[in-house]
Length: 165
Image (cartoon, rainbow, N blue to C red; front, side, top):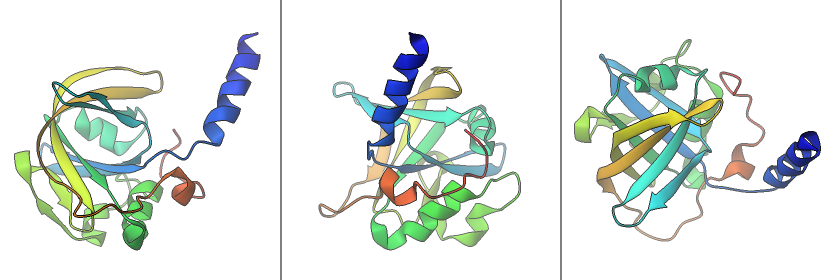
């Protein structure tokens, strides 16, 4: 019966079109970032946000030593930046050498093309299966200037990831 439940679940999530985020971080002088689909607000008071990072990717290894993460959303005009962070691995490519960015709060790399972003302090890390959850308390950010159409899973479904999930 478990396999049938897993099949039903996989078919359901295959049709969802959830928002996609580019998450960046820095630790030990190394900047890293990746495309993330497993992320969500988890609390209003106090404000909290959960980011799931795959145990297999470069960003996860850097984030293990980091104190903060930066979470970015993009409009469709800057899909190329999203694709860069979703299809390349920091193990092989300097993604930050291929895009515009600056050092922001807590020295986090902030991507200049983002429509909005926030930096959160990592409060807790815990297993989510093949991903590790990073519970964030927002400390600073730049909100969107208007209601826009954000990059979602349907926009990046075709990407071959830099690492398997």
